Length: 357
Image (cartoon, rainbow, N blue to C red; front, side, top):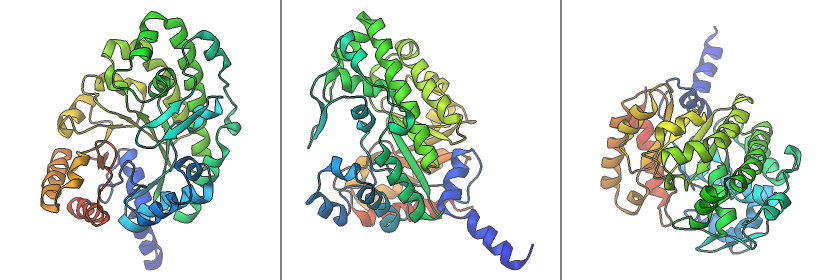
């Protein structure tokens, strides 16, 4: 190999894309990859200015705008991946559900799903009909990154989306959804069948548009017992991951409050399990098995403290990861509003420096 070709090969192995994909595929990267859930947000002045002109849904539905927002963290923080800027409810709109995003509250469903007629009325659009604006946004991001960083596609998991549809708004106890699940399993399964079909198509379309990896958000699944998860959720989440696996792209499975569910959640088929901060990372990794990757799990609230405190806790996460292949550094949940860009940038640089191999 010529000196020129050898140099090009070395550079390619040290891109954020190569680093991220190595971790997802359980190979040893040159350093631990870093990205942050909700990294494209209010931390950046350019995004805040954009919000003065457009609401969040308009930004998410306009490829030229959503791709700009997705690229801010690449430019400002040096993270290894750009994540799609899109609300998890976007494909639900395509099913014929009327909703809006209420600031400080979240998605509001105007007519919650509570009976079989409402379930039967839901559309299951074909793959090329689901949010084409999202796919165009991914293509723009992929083009701008030029193979230097990974592109992460996202979707809500069937259980979390079903809860939104049934509750009609964010909930603390998911009482309407769980009541339907237990008392009307026929209705529950009919709804989950439709949602999982749409989400599987949605994620496959994202990969075909250029997403290197996808993350499935099951933010509310921690409200279930392992037996309820296995009966009412697992088959539908498996369907989603099987569809992604058929594309050859790796998938990350994220949930909160899932300490009691990790064993059964691994059966869903994700390549990387993303954990929150309520479990020590080494304990969680031992539970899911070292043959599977893990993502996390710095407490996001730490970003509202000082660098010495953040650094101490970062080192603890890395110590528990023990340089095993398959670790992606992230928060245990979304980056909090009020996080400072200079601290986030310093965190990215410190993780790369501490884990450089």
